[in-house]
Length: 192
Image (cartoon, rainbow, N blue to C red; front, side):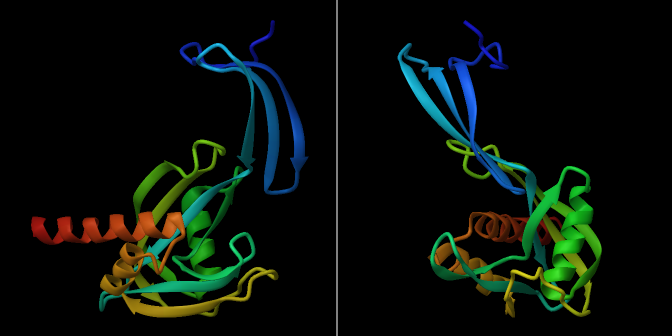
């Protein structure tokens, strides 16, 4: 019985794996497994071909910039921080800079990792995420992907954090980034 590349300490044993669906962004596989309790089972996994990237841009007046768009998967209009994907051949910081410029037209002179290597939905997906804080902003022209119809909204960072806390913003990357940024801002103020 072959056990693929299961980590030595994993209680799961993979018997077989097959690709069910694939496109340029994701691959869906189904594995026959022996579960931690010793029973036969199946496990579906969505492999993401890009690392998720998020950016919390903050201007000199304490405002941030949210991007609004209709999300097909949810069937609803959503407000989010600027975000996108980082392919294997691109550095995460370069992807963050590209996404911020594409979606908002903004460029930043200072970048700092806020959260790194976050697992976004670890029960069904291997997607990982890096979120940056971008400051020293200057305006430029947005150039969204051809499939994106975006609105950009400038709001006080405190208001965006409140939107994340009340559920007005539901995107996981945005919620994590905004809440971590609020904590980060508080720590920076306390240390001064």
